[in-house]
Length: 180
Image (cartoon, rainbow, N blue to C red; front, side):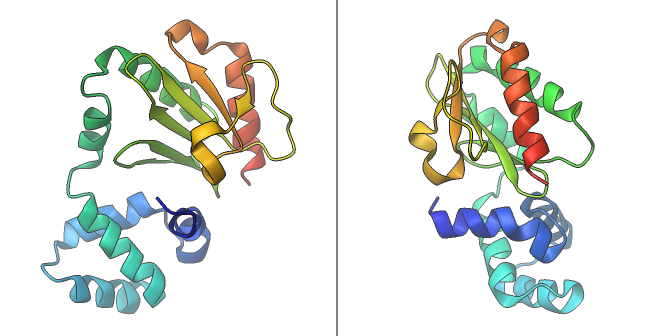
């Protein structure tokens, strides 16, 4: 995903009042046949600007799969890693009820006001937890963002459930707190 598109998705809750996942659910219920009809609906019924409406419709059509199917597909052939994903999601949900969980083809974005974390099954033996922690130096298990580029500032590699320890939860909580 290019940087401009990711920025647009990150800004969507603030600029449109809803996260991408919520807009996709709305469009799924309406079940439009044509792209232009869906764009017009978002603009007229919800006051979404043309740029955001077009992006929402385009991305909703790319994710023809139900949201849960996207996660299942991510862990296909990597089933042993799914408990790591599930433990991360359960941990994150304890932070507050203001989190939007947005599965995509290759990862799951965690958004408060802005994206604060990303969960990605990176290999058959590792899940990468990307975090946005601006101004924090890499230290210990908290590495530079690596393959995440601009989407996250840091990454933590997770290979077992035991890797989700107090240190990881603390970094995740800090990313959540900074995302307001």
